[in-house]
Length: 346
Ligand code: DAH
Image (cartoon, rainbow, N blue to C red; front, top):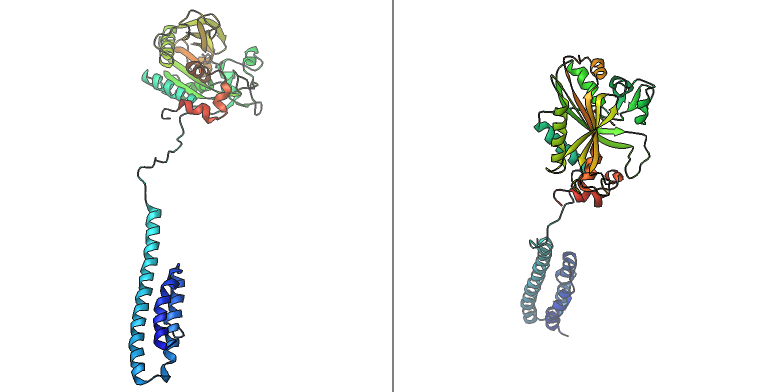
């Protein structure tokens, strides 16, 4: 084959050769194979010394054309590769605005906290403020100053976790009454105190070693049991429904005298009697009473000047009644299938 044919041949093979190139590195390699110092083109030209002047001229012209043709092909391939990269990137970064959005699994407010928020809302609306106390309490605040001296049989009503003889995990929110009275030094008080309490109970459907109470304490001049009844009736109607009634039954608590157990009329049967209310038409929801004179005196209040009422609401109990929950352990096992039912936004 003559040198000119060899040159033309290069232009014929380069297309198929370029078709196998996938990236810029391969492209540079191929370019060197064709146009480099030891490339195909240079090889052909190296053999031209045996040609006549005329043939050299002809070959020179042809080789320039072939070189220009090759360069054009390599440049076209370079652009093709670059475009492919840009197009792939664009395809990758395309946002399909019709796709459904990513849904975040938001948490919700725990049903017990929802109950406490409702209670706070109600009682703040009636002029109460919210007080808090520590969960690790002194025996003094939790029992002694609530008229429960050591050895008193009523201490057995609450099986308590003791840390040492003087410190315990509070078994009721009533010590917040004591703390508030000591701080207010004889002045009128109107508070609720929601919070956690602890008892040495074996956990079952109705008992939990940790649960919540919401204490109430109102002290002032001429506060009577009628005020207590009003405060609790409002609570029953807010927490359950406006047709509810309450009744007070005589009971005993060391810190109140007289003491009452408070029942709410059963919402399922409307008071006629059903299995939920065990046929009585009433459901027990809390303990309350007029603050015992001893309790007032021990915390610096003169019962002749100031008196009032206290109550202790079982937060789990009213939450269970409200939502028809039959096992208290549901509140503390953190099963999202249970908790999700109480989300405001599902
Ligand atoms: N502390 C009581 C308990 O845990 C509940 C209670 C009853 C609180 C009567 C009160 C009250 O303030 O007056 O069983």
